[in-house]
Length: 298
Image (cartoon, rainbow, N blue to C red; front, side, top):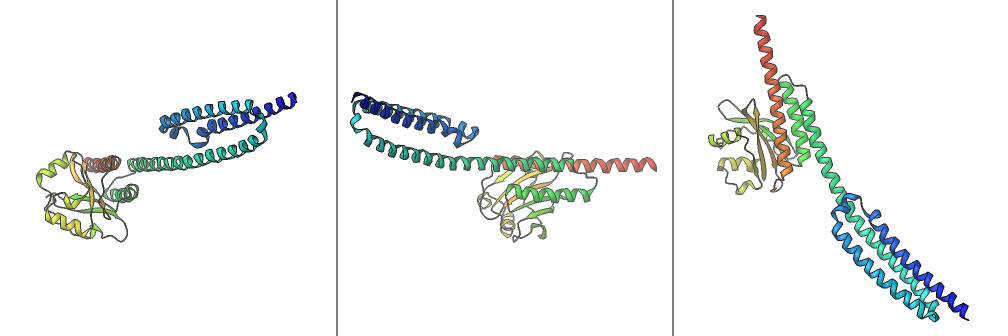
């Protein structure tokens, strides 16, 4: 009789031990199954807090269950059945946690991947422009066309244009990339009296204008009318300099809705304008070198 009781007690203790070990294994496996290290770092404080609370609950649960097993061996069979049910519920509970947190982790990872992809595309475009062979105006136009098309896709904007200044500081659309279905700015003859001299000087000094809502930005009525015809809701303007002189403006448009420009967008368009300016400098240098060579041969 004593042996059977001892055997029953041992079986109950082993069953409880197995339950506790199962729960701890699930808990210990949780971080490695859930997410890569980058996500764990972001969730560190919360994860450790949850880990500590669950550890405490498991410890209390384990103590109670060992006590029950040693003092009430007569209910051993029913306890085993209940323990089995509890184990199944615990396993399902942890699986649910894993699935929920995994979805959240995947969302964060995908967002980071998209950001990395955009950064890679920005860097690739800038490098491609830097290495492009440009010796004359025809080469410049090809490089600018490609740059604007790629920039429009990278930024996710409706239109990107280069507004080029004439010697009298009037201007025209030099090149453009626009989403199909929207009016093409290059088709509009622009007689824009809306850029005062003080603003031109600011652009020469690397002024950047990021306007999230053109309707409330205080533009000249003629300028607003032009923007309305082109469906412009938000615009971002950075200068393009050629040998320190104002060549034109690199402009991005959002036409479907207003848009608050992000720091990364502004920085990228500015870097692109600088690189386009370097391309122009290279062409200017080549023209100057050719003229000098012709002068020597005369």
